[in-house]
Image (cartoon, rainbow over all chains, first blue to last red; front, side):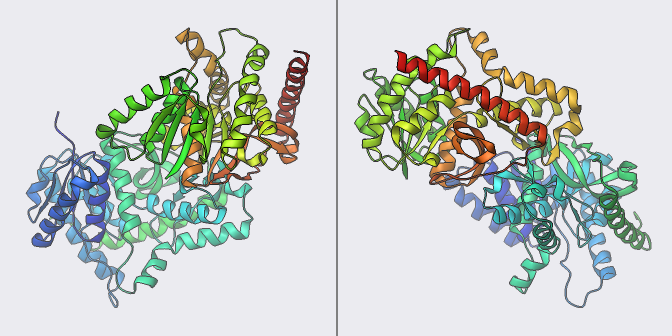
Length: 314
Length: 312
């Protein structure tokens, strides 16, 4: 029985930090691939040097060659450009669609049985690129977004209540971005919905801060964006797949009629296990929640329409 | 690192020490009047330490003075219930031990938070608090979080998800009349009833109610101790690390949830000082009625126990 293998395409801050969190879990060998081969090999070696103190007896490899991902159980796509000042949405979409298409081809070639986790933005649209290019089963391609948005909301709630972080659960639906749909009635402290613990104004503030969670970090950093929480969210998804945990969490998954949404990637609660998205959980939403989710889906659909103006599999 | 004294090195006491060592969060002193038992078990665990990477020191002693100045003291002495036994006989035997131990703890570890695991837990937590004379928020009983972990396990298996992500509060007496708060039984925030339906969830709650008895019957000569030890160690962890974890513990109520002068389990924020505050879980009318009925029944039992104690 071979050890599981997780590959991360793109060894920038998110990719490398995700590799670190996964190494600490001691659940799989790790391969990081990046066009910046030297720094990627250096990062892998630096992690290995820390191993004797941190007890992770796993192989960690840095490479410039995508062939190193051969037979991976999970492949994470973090490669792509961040949005630069002055760059418009469409430019970013074109650049990253090209990157994700390129690596997805390689995934199909070298790791045909992998579960693919997309992190590159614009997230929901990039999931479409990965799915179309790999031609994988729908359940083996997913995007990381909802877990990140939910962990931010969970932190804000724990901080406001004055309780342990581990006590708080949350569900956030929708596309990754301003249109996300945090659900206070499914946000709980030891199972108690926060709607019973806080007034609506306080909840409103926490929800609003969650929506702007990424931007808040960017505003402090000036250059660059968040990577610890995003990487932790990636590692959580990887762990769920590698260990077959049956983890219920919000992820971008391809919907075929669930929530009244057809043929679109969008954030919904799913059960993650060795087969990827093993189940899509269709909650009973209120009219208002449903309206917000539909509005969010509309934004994603526009992004896919933009993609369709130039995207081909050639 | 904080120091935790555990009185009673039987299955629950020793395995609580084991879980604390695995958590790497406190030094542990095990005490038992059975000569050598604590030293033997502590030594055995410490010899596993190099393999398990323990940073805690575990020591054993035959004399209770070894817990002097400790930050947390766990009462895990006394005897366990026999199959089919009337709880009042258990109370009469164990109350004597709890009273004697608490008189010593009061002088040896006057600033400790005391955790009672000795059954019947609610009655004896109250007795411990009265004997110690400590603030009520520093004397806690293991009840609701043990019932809760059993329920959470059962629900996770029925839904087909990891036990880690199931929440569920069980409050009230640690007796058959315990009350599972259905709206808090959730999977990553999603109500479990959504997956299981009302009827199946109710069946799981009934199964949880009988969980202790089920193990007692299966194991014949032994009560359950892994889940009780884990529940105790979780409480110790929240105390010594000051995690502010919300968990259901038995604590003397003085008006909260409409009850006065009784120890029963309610959700509370647990931190370095014991119960930091009691959390109002927002019970429905029918839950509040059931809770009051269960506590009234417990009050009658406690009064009967106390009368028997005086008569003896």
